[in-house]
Amino acid sequence: MIYCDAHCHLMPDDVFLNAHNLGVKTFFVNSTTPDDWLRIVDLGRRVLGVHVCAGVHPWFVDALPPDWNRRLERFLTDYPDAMIGEIGLDTTRPFYPLQKRVFQICLDIASRYRRKVHIHCVKAWDDLFEILGQYRDVQPLFHRFSGDEVIVQKLRLFNAYFSVTNGRVINVIPDNRLLVETDAPDGLKDPARIPELVRSLHLDVNYLQQNLELFLYDV
Ligand SMILES: [Zn+2]
Picture 1 (spheres, rainbow, N blue to C red):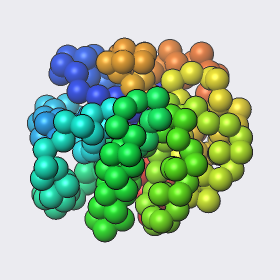
Picture 2 (picture 1 turned 90 degrees about the horizontal axis):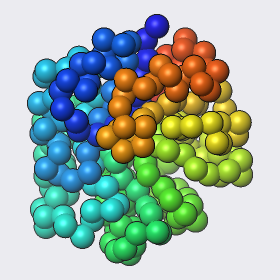
Picture 3 (picture 1 turned 60 degrees about the vertical axis):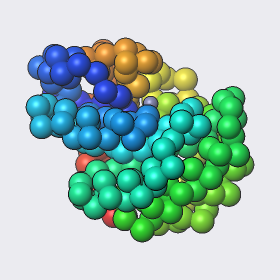
């Protein structure tokens, strides 16, 4: 059985190696600030199956260096396989107007560099639709998805994928758009817990693997 952790963050190598031994062969490792970007590239040189996601988390937009967007463009030029993540909107956190500006710039870069995006969206769906609607060519994956059926239907127009850490909203997500994640070191804490999560949600591993390939090779 092979598994994917569709959303996690930087952790010590042995955490990834242990998960790898337990069958978790793909990790979408997301950044929170520009300092993470090259560290994830380095991690990928030591651990097989790491996909680099370079982004700016909406919780940390206030601490961005002024040249962050030029750095992101340069990074994407240097690493043509890198995706963008995590980025997004969160009305429960401060600096919301700045979050919106940063999110828009990231989507603009994603569109120009043709990269998939890993999105965090908490209680900000109206603004998300307004901004994402300007970038129809960008392929989004919504992590720790928390929306309802109406939001899923709207997001299907964007060919969105969804990843979850539990079964709370699993029934509203189309089978062929579903992935699972730990959001480790937060969330479920450890990518080694993916097999247990898949079992507890009664999901078909082969189906999840197919969805992963659909997401990766969807153009
Ligand atoms: Zn995250």
